[in-house]
Image (tube, rainbow, N blue to C red; front, side):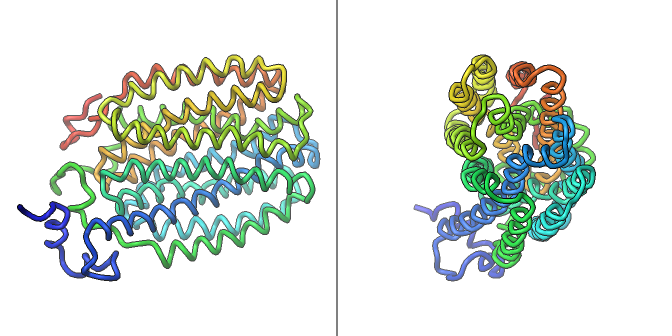
Length: 435
């Protein structure tokens, strides 16, 4: 009986490659792979947790910033949307850069820039100065997502990759769930500027961890699920001409409208419209997005075990149910009912979220992940740009009820669009793409 395939493949690599992620050369191959995956995911979780500290600080500071600068909801929407627009515009260039230079350098640069901008935001003295800082900050922050997904693609074998990718999404949502529990009480009792400045220290620490502890990439033979010839044309420009790739970007935009809209405007709505104490908005936000994080984990397991060849059968019904649950959410007459139906809507949205990224991570060769995830990331943050600004403007002109109602229709539209998603959107040769 022959040796396991992973052991055989590992034995064919040069010694330097085999030792790059292991301390002991006698360690079984699967143990070495698991160690590399564990360290990689720990770095990803830290990076995304930190990235969401900024978003939570902004979300819970919006009412205070609005009062300090006498800003309208539309102007407050620009504080969020200006940042997310520049993040979106940076995603495709970031994907090309990470494919060329690797995620270690790009992610370290992003984290150092993150720390610097947090200090500058703390010193901002005018509303338009704050908005300008957020816009410039967004270009640096745009390096984050594609860098972490490229890390997963290079350092985690395909059969573990969806779980690795869902770890990114879960870390994102856990941060959204946990950080408000700390930030909301602090924002209710402390000045908002020092909180941004102190957060910069954490950014420097995480940047050092990324630089010194990120594992080296796995050999290409271990990280490709489908054998792809080195002669295949996987140039970024050819990838960007594929309709299927842009379809994923549009899906990401539609699905992110609900996440960004409810996260950034939920606390302000609860405080202004429902009279909720600012400190209490922390646990209300935490419950909703913590439940969504659990749903992402469940969705990743369902995708891996049942729906990897038929993602539409998981995502489309989940998004349709999510849109229906937002109807009683927008009609809720109490804060508690609003949070209840918000939570349920986000849970079903979470089941669908992993299918876009899971399909890309399972089907795209690692050397092209940056470019494809750049399109997905751009779509995601374009949704993040539109949603806060749209809700701010509609709530100024009409009401929060009208603003949140728009999310019902955009989520239902995402459910319909998912029916066009096919897992084999990228064949061995690009001219065989199924669109």
